Image (cartoon, rainbow, N blue to C red; front, side, top):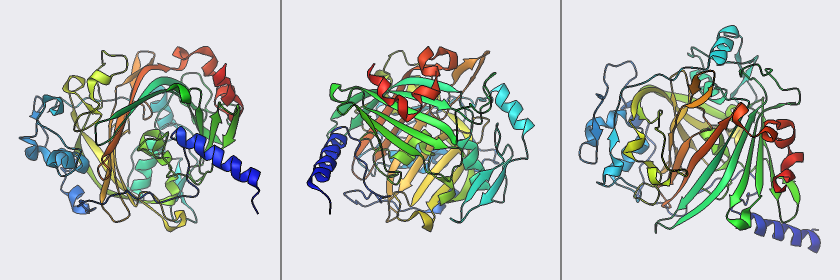
Length: 458
């Protein structure tokens, strides 16, 4: 029987995490929206109708897409973008100039030279291996792009792993400003830090391929909170394994208790810092256990994406995005132009071994450029109804030696819940990479592991 002391402790911890927007629900739950309105259903034909990457069809540079002419260009729009134009949900485009999409020429995003060299060096060594879940894990991966020329069989998994292992530096940090918006246009703003360390499969300057203290880990993600004051110093830590079949470790540091707690590894569908994202939406939307999903390619299509976002003149970027507009988090035209890029469209569905999961269908649009970034994703609920839209925009980041590239984790993103009519917006600023990072944060052995979580209060 549970003691009164244990019950009081559990209640206290739940209250603390709930107040911070970090309550993790026990087990892998299926999050079901509170209201199911008349929703569009999941339909593969909607993706089939998109323009094929092999066609000569495109949108001429200089085109301005508005609420009045969008139907002419819908074949180049992710299904979620079409939904925003169609106006069937609470979140929808209005006639304001802020929602004009200006189209420019398609530009390249070159791989970092070291990453490209490692891709060539280890090409052909990486293999897919089927495991007991029925899905596929990866083996013999060293560095570089795992599948530089992906093709069937299991094309979907190869594309997903190209995104999973695309280039990241050893360390990067930035300030994240998070806005949460409800249907009354009330805005709740918080700020925090994002610290990432890639400690294995590195292709970064003279860094070793694997750091000597990495152990089984691949990526360490630390997120300290700065505001509001009651959440100051509260810090989460996710530790991703090199084995993608292994669910990540999660920790939280509670400043009120001066201690760190290990969180349930089963709560993959719990809200991430109280937002409309869940823990499995981390890493730009793809850091879930890939081998526990069936991944089907719905096509290689031409889609509109913002992958060369211009520099915003405001430090927190709030004047460059529509924070409390009819589509929260939408980038204003001055951040464009948008481009027509080739992208693989993946339908990712949980395998039975995962049990009842939050997203029966997660649709990912992964750029088929040298960058392999996730430019858009959509999810459907357990009834097959349209549920969430996630828009991502990237600004190439200088990485030294005169090079720059886009990085999955450094993204301005907004997620729109079209059923419950609320949204979350994450904007980055003060981005620093490798030697630009504060000297003490370059030491992942201390800052990237649970033992260093309490250092946030120094």
